[in-house]
Figure 1 (cartoon, one colour):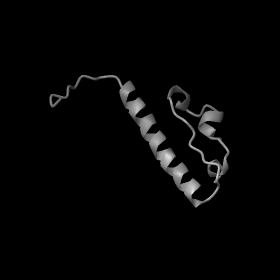
Figure 2 (spheres, one colour):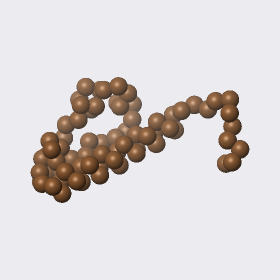
Figure 3 (tube, rainbow, N blue to C red):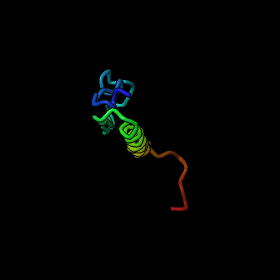
Figure 4 (tube, rainbow, N blue to C red):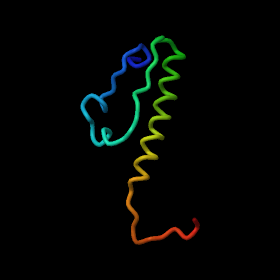
Length: 70
């Protein structure tokens, strides 16, 4: 509700929670404060989560196994 009402606040950004500060991501927010704004914030959260996951996967170093299918 907070970010759907125009407040760009997220604990992960404010307190540098865990390793979130090592990734490039934005805090999704809307200013309208209605149902559509809450929905759009949730969609934005999913999009940003995917961005974080993709960046994390790129940083995983290779191991002794090799994928022969690529």
